[in-house]
Amino acid sequence: MYKRITHIGIAVKSLSESITRYEHLFGFGPKHTEEVQEQQVRAAFFRIGDSGVELLEPTGEESPIARFIARRGEGVHHLSFEVENIEEELLRLRSEGFVLVDETPRTGADGFKVAFLHPKSTGGVLIELCQKL
Ligand code: ZN
Image: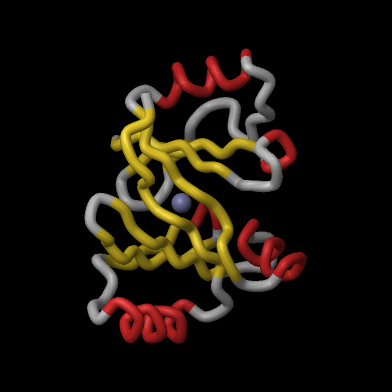
């Protein structure tokens, strides 16, 4: 079961410049920032009601965010949905023919386990499923 849009992920070159831009846009600052070493990203989270915006800055050239920016420039990177049971949902989606980037969930940012669906099976949209740890 899908519960909410957790956040919209946005790939940025500079987290500090982008935080300033979004602080001006929203009129408030990020809830928190953190580094996910496994993914080579630094992230900042702005809470918008029950949802949010996740700014993602690459910390290394092998970061998926660095590759995304090199290919497509800065901008919307993924949509994240919170689900009740991520393992069950991955099994169901695979049986429906979706291509999974992650066969099993891994530890993401902000206290969630996460898994991505490949954009080639979702019409070009990178979709992240997450479940609170
Ligand atoms: Zn995300």
